[in-house]
Amino acid sequence: MNHPHSGPVVGFKVLHEVLPSQDATELYEVVIKLSNYMLAVDDFVMGRPRAQSLKRLANQRNFVQHCLMLKCPDETDRNLGENKAFYTTSWLAIVIYSLITVFPISHQTAPFAQLSLRIKDFTSSPAIHTRWREAPSLMLWVTVMGALAAADLPERSWYISVLERLTNRLNIGSWDDMRTELQKFLWYNSVSEPDGQRLWKEIKRSSPFSG
Image 1 (cartoon, one colour):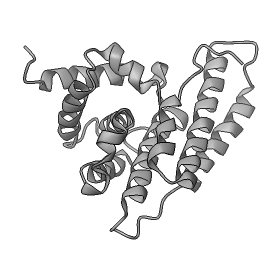
Image 2 (cartoon, one colour):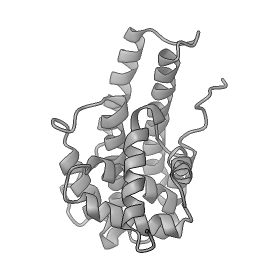
Image 3 (cartoon, helix red, strand yellow):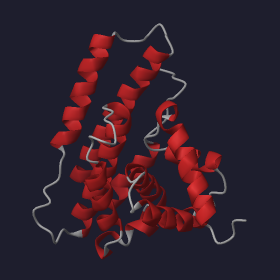
Image 4 (cartoon, one colour):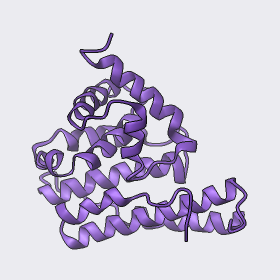
């Protein structure tokens, strides 16, 4: 079925290159469900003939959120190996996306502070050091999710610093370029465009070459 927003999550295919098959499949299936739900939401918002009813959308939303939470990794072992650490990092970022877009909760009530702190801990740890080289675009998306969750937190400056270096490395020179990369994963413009533009402006202001 053709859709004006079809083709997302292609970036997540890299999971199959950097994670064991079962772990990669678990995450990939979840992001497909999240993406399909947002396509259905877009159909409803735009009034397309194929749009589902609100009741069906609500049931689908509850289902995909349940599927996501079922994949919650066990973090009781603080000495997580490389694969489990990267799985956990990716899952945390997907949860942030879901709480912003799929099952939206305000910053005042959602656990964004805890999520952004955990992503910071994982992304700065030696456990996933090689992932910055093996899957840089996915790490960009993960870091952006962490930055959005840290919108009003002290950790925001850390995320901005990381993104400033990473966007330079990936030759991302504009918000349009950045959005194009994010849309390979999970990104819904109608919800996150203003926050994304604000983030990009902060990244550019942090650059030593700005001004």
